[in-house]
Image (cartoon, rainbow, N blue to C red; front, side, top):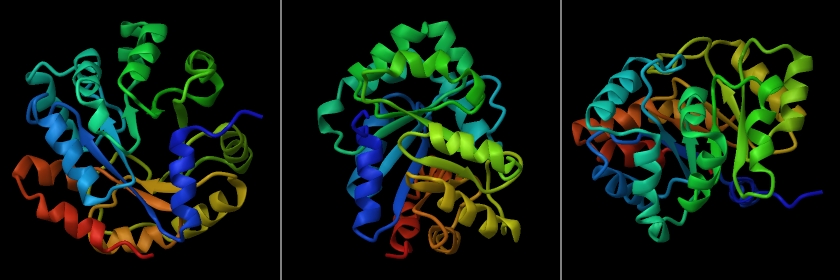
Length: 259
């Protein structure tokens, strides 16, 4: 059996300490590629467990309005998958927490799968999230990740049937990304009653940490959802805070985590 990859080790260490993981999502290139180093190092200093780097894309099927607008701003600055990875590789020695790239399949294919994986390795990337890559086609990427330290993170939706959940859990690396809502990312007032049951079931089935994301946008929700799983992924609220220059809001989100 292969040794766990860095991303999974970091998540499991957090759980072993009785703490909750906090993954911060940013739209890479929002504010310009020059802002990327400052944003990543700010989040690292603030104490996030890992950072999910959104790659701007023209047709983002899973993104809500805040992240879509951030993606358009990033594209306007010339940000793309290749430029983002090159920028990160220029300061990778300063990064001490895992970076997870969230991108759709199209930009990876345009890049060339082998070249993309190589560029991720050179940039010190620890994980990949590809929302439009179904488990049945995952080998397209996972075969290229053999022998690397890059984990392919699987998403599980609220509507996934039990058999599929078990299949995804078996294939998962790094952590399981539990989607907390049906639909796109973005700010939500609350969550459905079935969510607690869904997350509890995922925790039973999964051998690796389960993190929940989509729609978690304030300190109360961070606390509420963290209590059900091993950690949370927060996107829109962090993207908005950086865009508006309200970094203190990010610290507020982090300080409310239960331990």
